[in-house]
Length: 340
Ligand SMILES: [Zn+2]
Ligand SMILES: [Zn+2]
Image 1 (spheres, rainbow, N blue to C red):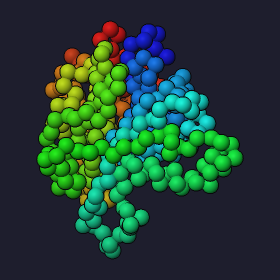
Image 2: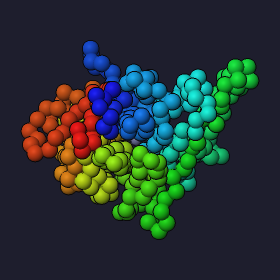
Image 3: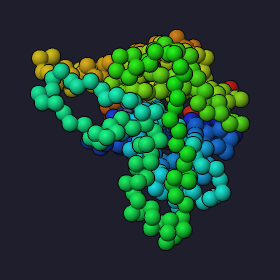
Image 4: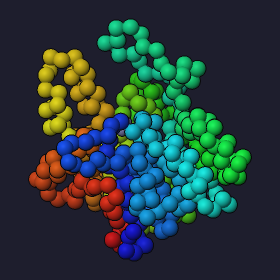
């Protein structure tokens, strides 16, 4: 817990990718999830694996969580959403409280285009509704657990996650030209998606193809502002969103690792994996460029790919001067209030 009451971030989990990264004796980083703490209120961004457990490890509980924001619907960002929803039936002790607002992307509306390397046409799962948004994803997770939940609800008289959470699909501003396959991150202004007495949260589209829509979020408080990039390649929208913020949490991929892991330029699979990472994620130098262009006070790299690359990234940041840039561990506390 923070010594004083100034706003801060807790890096609940700092690994990116649908993996349990492990390397020799290194500790496995938890999946990507971030808590923004303002006074006695907690706001979560993404629910990677172990997010709920990490929240408790950090000394908080679901009782304090006002809202959860999903940057996009990749599994490494929502792996723990089901357990958070199910466990809420016991973890939330104040049943009179208002529902936790769950905000995230709406239905993509159209499937991604099929890879030109496909030998036979792949069959998508859930053909009747293959690109659900936040409301439908959450509802289906709850429904998949009906046997458990109905026992809790009927026999133990516990509340339903459908009452404890209020899922919302983000509605994009009109006329910005968004198209999931052709134009996933048109240049735009941030727009407000949530507001209460402590925070105003704005979103902007970021570039994470073929996933779309994908968002970065900015939290403005009376004492300072923090921005979370979500998964994104370099995009001018993020510079717009982060302008003048006190803290930017930016995703980062270790390109040295990527090149070492997939060195063979003649391998089609190696080329495909490298190209996916390079067009959908951000190198350390580009993350630094975004932080400098946006004139933020501090940069923290998270959503680390690979999830074992802390020492390598720190070494690559060692030459950085003029910008306070860190590679946090899980459960680090980073104050962002101007009184820190
Ligand atoms: Zn991710
Ligand atoms: Zn992603």
